[in-house]
Length: 98
Image (tube, rainbow, N blue to C red; front, top):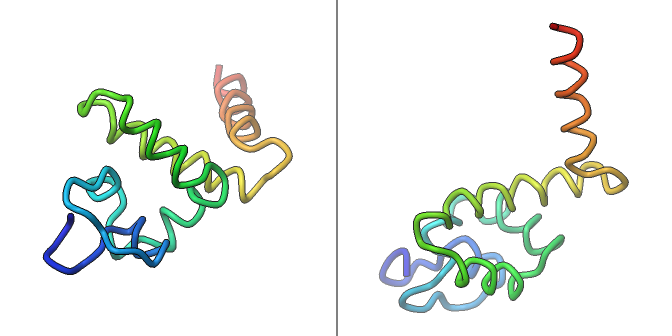
């Protein structure tokens, strides 16, 4: 739990009480619930993210949570290509610079 009665960002968005040992608390803060967890929940679902994070080493969870949040945001911005359009644009920049 991120505080005594303060839910983490995931449970704030889901309007539930955050539990002790919450898997979301270290990665989704209360202040950024709508900006960070909402896209993750819409694209992947809270249950799937919980399962994914719980099957990872603790040292890898932060990077995965950040990547998932970015992928969800990009997926909502461009539902056809998602992250592929971002990767393609970066490849084009590299090719132009070479």
